[in-house]
Length: 238
Image 1 (cartoon, rainbow, N blue to C red):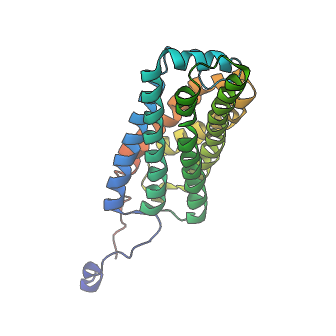
Image 2 (tube, rainbow, N blue to C red):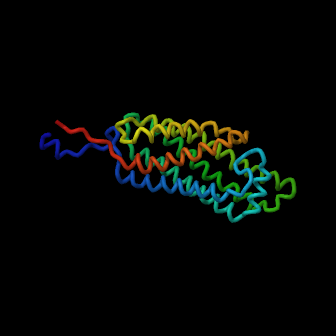
Image 3 (cartoon, helix red, strand yellow):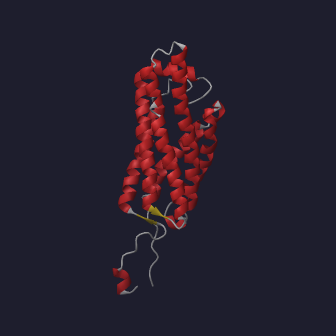
């Protein structure tokens, strides 16, 4: 190695380089995303048929019966999904693989899906706040429409998340510094998330969330801890 080589810092933007400061922020956002979404699901544990099209009236009655849990769940989802959108944006900034265009497309799709779903997550709050009785036909129809909106945005999120995870993880090669198992898990999580886009028309597709949800949540945690924590080795300059 020459003296000039030793004194010259590696240029920003080289393939595989991870920006440490942005990587740290992405880790925080990723862990916040996992926490928010896990809590959002936990608060709905006693609500029947949440985010399933088969029995939306039962979903609404369950929310009315547990308004505090419903509100906590919705706001946890909002915080978790906003954090998830921020996570994907920061990943796009922090990681610079050779296939940067594919990474940007994947991170962009996932971030848009998370942001859209964050907006849709407040629809159940509107239903229980302004349609509390749901007894007359017009109120019942309005409540069903609001919960249907939440369901549709969640379905769109799973579609965009699935596409985004596949594209993002395929763009990361060995030079990215991300472990192969993290990249493989991301592709699998993305592929399993894709059919959940049909959750607005079938309970069967909605039940796939029992598999796809844990997979992508584990991937977010793994990416935050094992992926963004590492920097690829720098070859010695001769």
